[in-house]
Amino acid sequence: MTDTPTTLPRTLGPWMAGAIVVGTVIGSGVFKKPQYVAERVPEFGPALAVWVLGGLLALLGALALAEVAVMFPRAGGNYAFLKEGYGRFIAFLWGWVEFWIIRSASIAALAAMFAEGLHDVLRQSLHEPEVFTFWQRQLLAVATIAVLAAVNCLGARVGGGLQIVVTTVKVGSILGIIALPWLVLALVDQPLHPPKLANLGTIWPADWSAFDFGKFGAALVGVLWAYHGWMNIGPIAEEVRRPQRNIPLALLGGVTLLIVIYLGANVSYALVLPRGEMAEVRTTAVSTEFAFRLLGPAGAVLGSAALMVSVFGSLNGNLLVGPRLLFAMARDKLAPETLARVTARTRTPVIASAVLATWSATIVVLGGALTVYRVPLLEVGSLTLDLNVPAGKPLYDVVTDFAMFGAVTFETLVIAALFHFRRKYPVESNALPYRCPGYPLVPALYVLLMGRVLLNMFLTPDQRTEALVGVAFILVGALVYAGVYARRR
Image 1: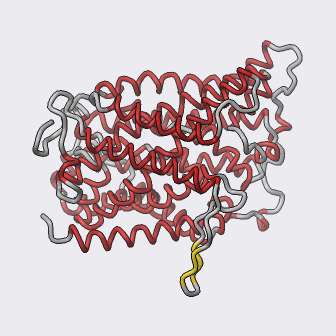
Image 2: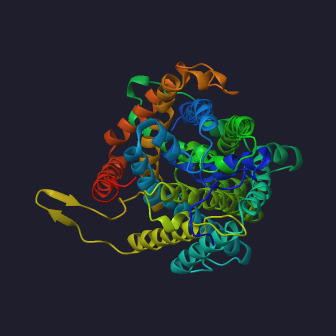
Image 3: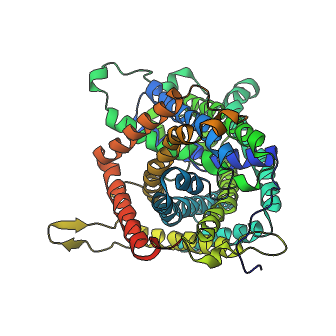
């Protein structure tokens, strides 16, 4: 292992970069979040509009981010962009929130879903009500994190190669979901639950004045989780070959593919599962219930397997790109410098990978404990702090909403930085091989819409706690920076 910080080699081509964009985004969201949306938006038209809006927001952001990433193709992604745009303090706060909450909570949620998916496959295959206990499933989640972290320590080329394979399989599984209702109609004489347009229910609200736009916004936060990860090209930008060409290709091509397959999957779900019944799918994934209704027990196994493979790929991608943030911060002396060390043979930040994997595994255990055991309320004066999972809200949704608050906050600042870069580097910007089309309207729309999403989190009761805790955590990061890193250069 080298003793001093270094650069990372450019080993990732356009296919690997694109696979990382698509592979880290497609995880559990497209399989689980349709229930979250159906619970809050009962009509099919507005529900599909939530997925369209989430995709358009990701596309607007990708159009703008591609220019920023081409301008600064460095390890760390958003950290490097925020440092250039706003300085060390804001960059540190992003790194603080991204490590402690966004990336690690995402990894923890995905690992827990992988364990649940494997458990469903075994349970349905063996016709047993339970194969693993709750804590055995959490142990499996921790072990999965450890194994994939070790694989990605073998080098970006190894992790990227695995990502191509898994992404191909998971995209194929979603295409199978899209085609399955039509195949059943064509090949099965009398299916038990045939797909039909009547299952869509009410297409549009009869009275828009009574429509709950607050719940629509809450559903959008859930959908943003399903699209979250499209920025993951940033942390590995230093390792992408010909970044001025391959980064825009990977970003724009990946996000476009995501929009198409997400909309197709949601239409297929809705043709088989009426809206009210979809909202009640709580003990399994929507994809599993969907496949069960079309193919019986064998379909349930296939649905759970698709979820499991998809989550596995997203986990691998997150454990590949996540340590690059710690590497970049340590290289700038905004994190312990040992995190910037890389192995002499594979040139990967092994210590950073181990630290991220360890904290993510810890969140799995802590989340499991909060699910099983009730924590006494903490009262400080007139303030009551409740660390328990809100009644009726699954831990998975709590963790993902928590992660999305920090992500939306700082990722919106990244897109807004494009205005600063255009003014600060006019000559360099004009010479770039890629420039954001529709500037300044495209980044301005993204910033305004995401700002409204953030405001809605504070106004919506079932997301307010996650937003307030996120603000508190950012303030703690500000205190750490002031006390430890403000004078370091």
